[in-house]
Length: 176
Image 1 (cartoon, rainbow, N blue to C red):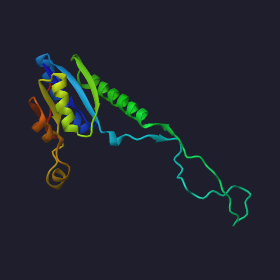
Image 2 (tube, rainbow, N blue to C red; image 1 turned 30 degrees about the horizontal axis):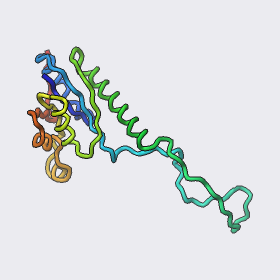
Image 3 (cartoon, one colour; image 1 turned 180 degrees about the horizontal axis):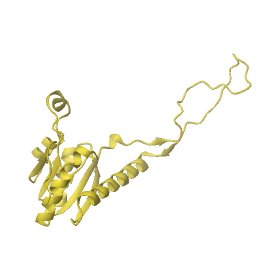
Image 4 (tube, rainbow, N blue to C red; image 1 turned 90 degrees about the vertical axis):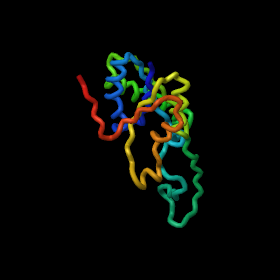
């Protein structure tokens, strides 16, 4: 049995881990910890944070004297491809740390994907990885917040090719 556990990098998202760790241990299931990086959240890092286009007055100039100072535009210290690779590695490290904390004695694999549609990526990963189920936490937004932002968990339930277990914000795993 294989359980896909999508995590968003928050403590709220990790609420699902104790429950699934106990279930995986009992069922001798393996776990895939999964994170989706939205590409619009990753940006190149400039070498300088100084704003461009500010007037430059070199030392020793007379007020009112016009000087033309050609200043090269800053080049990124890290381009977008490098930034994506860095974020991918950071998220893998995060997932490995979650595996270490919550899943001792359980076979755990970590996966990081990039996608603009998180719910669709989770559903596709479940099919691609041969998951028998998906387990995820929900923040349980209500009212206007839910109407504006929707629920990734709700969209995963609608799109997933396998059953989805959703752990709410007040769930407490029984141990022992």
